[in-house]
Image: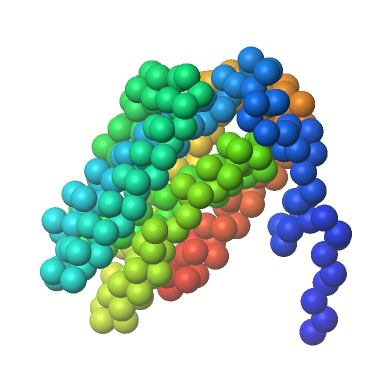
Amino acid sequence: MDTPEKTPGTDDAGQSTTPTGTATQDWAQASADPTYRAAVVDLLGALAYGELAAFERLAEDAKLAPSLADKAELASMASAEFHHFERLRERLARIDEDPTRAMEPFAGALDEFHRQTAPADWLEGLIKAYVGDSIASDFYREVAVRLDSDTRALVLAVLDDTGHSNFAVEKVRAAIEDDPRVGGRLALWARRLMGEALSQAQRVVAERDALSMMLVGGIADGFDLAEVGKMFSRITEGHTKRMAALGLAA
């Protein structure tokens, strides 16, 4: 079957890959706009706390690991997440922003998300890291295309996969193969995580004025409301593909 040709200047999802507006500027140029600067500080603050929380969670999940090798693997991933946090903290300090103050608005919501979605066992922890972190990563990647070149490079670097995806897929598929009944429980758990994670992403946008303005068109070439809807549709499609990789029904 022939593969449809992509429109020049677009990616596989049909998004434009040709930089325009703010995306063609560096930080020194773009940060002259105080509203844009505030949006970036919000974004980096949310990302930084997310990475710090991911470090804490992976270190905690390592205690549930069924083997020493699995424990070491998760500990290594936790270390990578903390390194990402350090890079974000350093960038905030470099642009004369207090990292703690930048993270504080997001700590409560993220802590509540993790409280409501505490895994009951090792497999649920793997699903949470794979599904929840991937949804957050997709969201931030969508936002990154509208950022100045310096900030975009940093955001994409800290969103690099720490290796958790392949590790989670391998372990979950093996568990389902050993006991197919596990699949139903994990599929329900993943659906719950999907709903909670999307709600969290929407709250992040709605509660921070500068960030929401960037997404709905208040800053330069930001998304309009229709594009925001398409963005969340693409995130949902990505989740469906990841569920298939796990061998679970979306």
